[in-house]
Image (cartoon, rainbow, N blue to C red; front, side, top):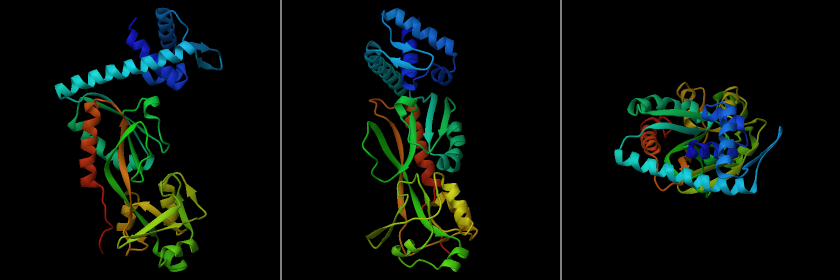
Length: 305
């Protein structure tokens, strides 16, 4: 029996609380996972898991063993990363987690060029707007958009770019409902909210170093910015959206900027990864590549008339 491989399987079973999910993630059968756990229990002479048809729980011995296995696996990964760094060639599977819209509209465009530059790396991408548990879910890296101050955690968060947020509406909506002159005027309008944005219903305006924030509300709230965009395009209200989400509609004149005299609020794009002594070359390679790609491709200013 390969003890290290069995330890890795055991850790994923505990993390996911499921034999079948661990098997699916690792590309093996559930029976193979069960057999590896049984062999591991025989090897150490103790029961690690209590299994019933409905529930999987970790024994007291299993919990202590799980913590040691995590440390051992982490140390092995660090050793392998160190060797890879010395050899200088990024390789292996890179598991990336990213929010849905940014992943579809930006990350997806960058990946082909990255793969061409690093043919020994295979990319496994998950798009979801919920915040992941990188360690538990086995991700190498997450791309997150948030306020400049990311909450403290055991993760490393490196800012790689910024996303300008523009308050916008259709000319038709503004003609019918009037154009807001100041932040307080937004309270009189139907403001459409992207609920996963860190500034969801607290919109900020800044001019000459002075900043004001207003609480907004409206009849549509959505967990996807494309839903908000389509509602704005239907002349239903005003929204605060990232420029990359609205760019082609700005260029066509379907959307116009509200408050052009103010500076746009900017959220930070972070590359987030587990705190390790040696960062994996594949992770480092991707962060450097994507930061350069965003600098060239992510527009920061509203186009001039």
